[in-house]
Image 1 (cartoon, one colour):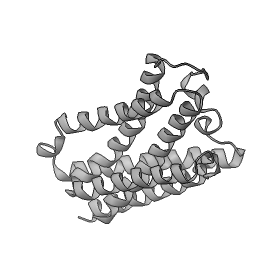
Image 2 (image 1 turned 30 degrees about the vertical axis):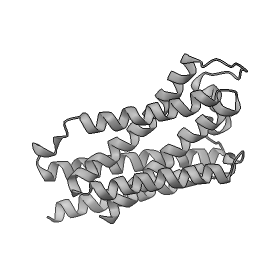
Image 3 (image 1 turned 90 degrees about the horizontal axis):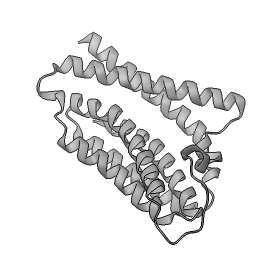
Image 4 (image 1 turned 180 degrees about the vertical axis):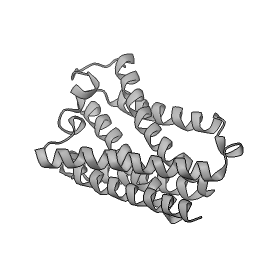
Length: 202
């Protein structure tokens, strides 16, 4: 389903960009290995959790699942839109863009040894962003029986954001992430509203 694909693509792109921005800042601060392995560890943890978790599709009525998916879309979209609109009006950018190291409590250092603390902090940041995507996308994919569309959207988003990070090497701050998140929030609200209308009409 196109709506599931678009939701998975947009949510993953926004959240994975935040993960990459923090990882890139860590790499430039001398924590390259921690940035790479922490990102992979955090993402892998959520993937494994998703694969092993008992999903409610087998015992939750489909209308309830669709209602949950619609409400999650509306809630996430409204929150992203509200927060992004406030930042636009105040001409502010997220701390993970302006001061990514301060956001995760890490200072720049030159060392040949891997820092377990930085590795765990990066893994936690990566896992949190991936979990936010899963919370929104999973109920939608389950309700629509559209896991292939969801997985395709998420994979394409990771590839696109990764390619963009390579092309904009050192210039990630040039991306208007606040406007992109605002547009994504509005899109999620529209999809959630459409799902609610379909649910009521049925």
